[in-house]
Length: 160
Image (tube, rainbow, N blue to C red; front, side, top):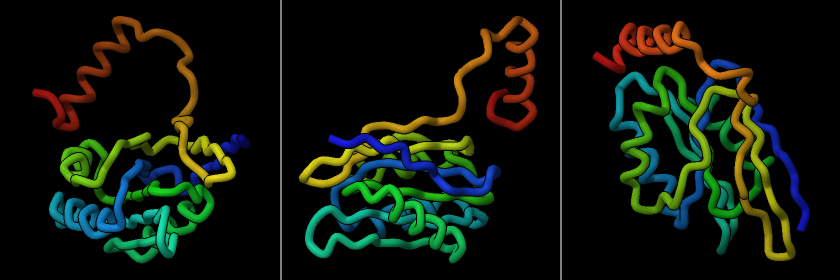
């Protein structure tokens, strides 16, 4: 088995969601789920088909994000994996809708951080075994950090 760390290529301010699914229907169902979250959400998604024609299926409402999703899916090239890029929206807003898609088996990450996808390759093919999402912690939050965190969540409307 060969292990490879595949970097996700994206602008720093773009959010990405990477997961695993099990069926070609994923592309249309994810599109419908995402489009229903917000009229302002811009997205592109790509899905690596694992059998049949084994194509990279794609969709979205932003051609640049669709192209970026396809490019990254080609680099990852792991069967039944998908990648979604978001603009004008955040993972916290779309993950509940995505989790309702019956074909979704799991989500590896949802982040704006730099990401590397850990891909294992065998004679059968390629699969995602995990992700590296951002950098390791530099310490433990202090009382001041805790206060700042709680304040930020209230300022941006995620807590009352």
